[in-house]
Amino acid sequence: MKTPSALVAVAVVSLSAAVLAQGTGAPQGAIQFGGTNPDGSLRPARAVTRLFSQDAYTQYEILEPGSEAFRITFLPEVGPGATELTNATRSGSEGGEIEVYDPRTGEPLKFTYEAQANGDHMIRAQLPMKVPEGGIGRVLIYKTYKDARTYMMNGKDIVWVRSLSGYRLGVVLPKGFSLLSSDVAAQMSTLPDGRVKLAFANPSGQSNPVTIHARPTDVKYTPSPYTDMFFDDIKTLYDLGDPATGTFSVEQTYSDYRKGASASIDAMNYLALRDLRVVDLDTAKPLATKTVAGKTTAALEVPIKNEKQSAHLKVTGTVNDKSYGLVNGEIVFTRTIKGLRNTVLLPAGYQVTGSSQSGTVGQTREGRAFVALINLNAENSYNVTIRARK
Image (cartoon, rainbow, N blue to C red; front, side):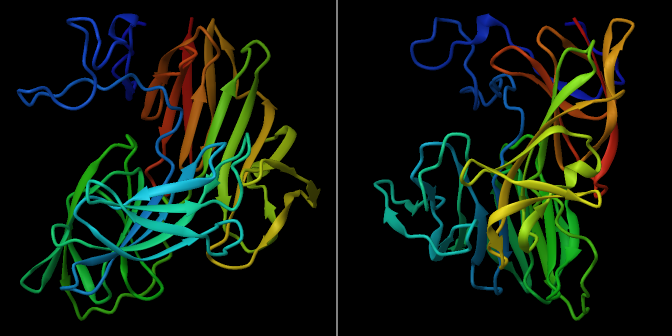
């Protein structure tokens, strides 16, 4: 693949067959992936193959000054065949006040909190059902950590330092504290109870150390209209078909927290999907849909009645419009896309030659190139053009 022009703001990662060996038993001289070398220099990462970054959302609520404690809300997922989900307490952190819920029903789930041989502890939550093929298991975990290495006092100021190991994260300051500094860029808002919240997104999905300094204040914070855009787990895959036909498939997954017995299929407002299908990812069952006065909804088996509940949905369909096609032998995909995460998957044999928005270029294990786009701005939509040749 030729080097893209300087206007193409993408992170390109290539991989040749010669560098696939890793770890014990690798041929002498083979590249070692991940971590650092004995001299402290970085080893290369493996080529990007995942269409989307890490899914789980984590929120940290910093508790009273001097307590060394913070409350965590965590939404992990697990794949088909699983009957339980495990979550380890980070080494050195004292965990307690654990609650585990089924996000589909909002009901508590059975779990154990077990000591491990290395001194850590493990939450082992029993799923309400075996995760079916085509489904995704998930749980809602609340837990409190006490860790003097993470949360400390500097006079009257508080200092909170953490290696944020996820992609979508939120940190809430204690009430009555103002933010002095955060060394990682964040969206900032005020919650209804007057606490300040920082929202982070890390497109790489890798560890991202952050240090937050905050100070007591007499300023009365009032709720702001901003919401944590990184809490939204929506992700949309545009799977490009034969460019001569202008057809592509769409797969969108997201969690809907809006109360009611039906879920609004918002994608139909900006995607003219044919062969629409909506699946409940908790059960892998298709849901009945209807369209009334231009609004498409899906009937939920379990109505959403409280804040612990959500419907985990997958929406699929096909699109055929003028946003995709061939121009002088080059694929051009150009349209307004919405939501936090969007990935454009090219037809087999095509390589990316341009992207008008910053994205991560990778290749699936089947050899198809893709561009993964992350929207770090508060606006919910933006225009993008992807170009490719073979």
